[in-house]
Image (cartoon, rainbow, N blue to C red; front, side, top):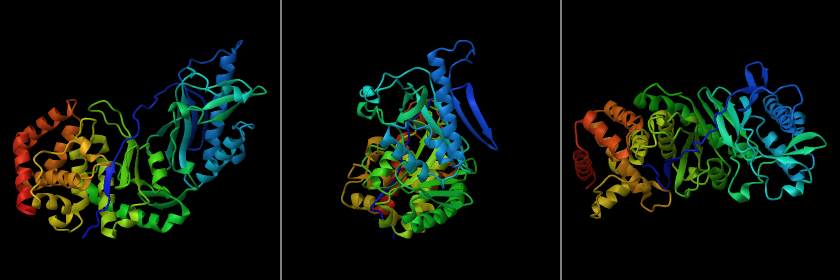
Length: 440
């Protein structure tokens, strides 16, 4: 029987990705590219202004940082950090050491030339400071990221004796502008690789990482057998040291105490255009050991279904469909009786509290004390569709809803009518009938 003290979940990083053009100061080394992208025109070599000089110098600084990461050049990397910001230098040195084993195919930065107001304590630098209004770190994991993952950051640059340096990434945190972070910001990163799987964690977790890598390798073709081949069929799994680190890495402000894992990606928040970038599965290190081996396999299939379906998951896709499909694939290969996969839902039905409507999005918050019931309800909806109309119809319905430009309710209603030839009330009635038949 599967252990279910925790529940898989999906979340999404901010979709406010800065999309900038016109590359400058680009360094090409082998098959990797280090660059700084910005929106200014080509600078005139005649009588450059102080602002133009500053732009050129910061471009060069960021290009050096990117090249240093790709070529493991600590000295070059640290040459870009303010020599007078001692604490920040220690943080940057640790971060650089932490990411040494990861392997990147690109590491670059994007920014605009529009300035952000100086931080509150700018006077503490005793020199000229400047901060861009929009700034992102863009990186690609070698062999796994087809497009860069973009981390929004809020740097401060300082001029020392005619030279510009990076002085801080946290000056604006007190104003709520917190720089995005990744696994290497919280400790040394160990790596376990399989042909289609990359697991990043810490050396102390290496045994768990190997188990996760093997299970993910098995899960990929299982997910593909349901969803189809039109996804990367690769997985990047993060195993942070603590749940606190997990929340910071994924910018997740929900209660994670009952979450086993989550999936994150940058998405376009326009209806009908998901366009995900940087899919990651992040495991909750506090809850993962509470799951049986079978439970861990179910959760990984669940999360990898989110990865596979992300490109067809729009802002209008209801959570019951997102989580229901993932649960359906998660349990499909578990060889469990329905009563073992829906313990909490069966208890609710036998207690005289059967669900009467599909669970709303807010029911899937980590703080909901009936979270497990709502996941099982969502699973049963998708199970009903697959059993009565075929698995292919379930996947087609998911794609139709996710790529619709209508509202959530209209997208689901139209897909159900067109593909299942039902009204929503009829689908709900079938779902309730199946639950009573199998769980009452």
